[in-house]
Length: 119
Image (cartoon, rainbow, N blue to C red; front, side, top):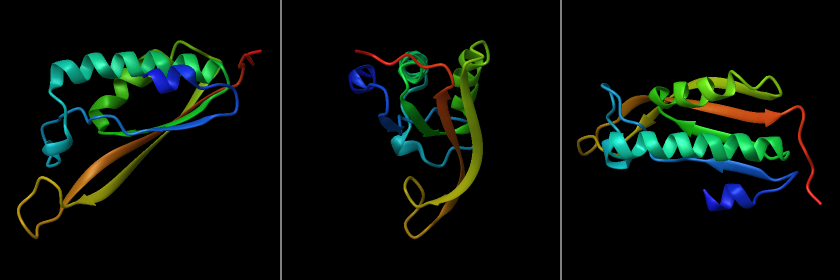
């Protein structure tokens, strides 16, 4: 969060935070515990929104279960725009040896149309 909070106009940030678990997750080795992950994602959403208002462009990837945390906060800010895309990818982490599982992943692009340059 400190890095995002230090970003300024023109910076680009890619976030790949711990995935929120869902009932179909095969990618459990990288998934944070649900309670702490929810708290972290709420804090991250606030930092991302503040950064976008400063003119920082952000892309976040995560599980579909994380989307509502971000879109709920973004919905009430007409000058902060977002683009949401769902992708399905193959994962070999957290599944049996030699096995591959399909996992849905969300890409969320966040940017502001009314940013405030600093200094």
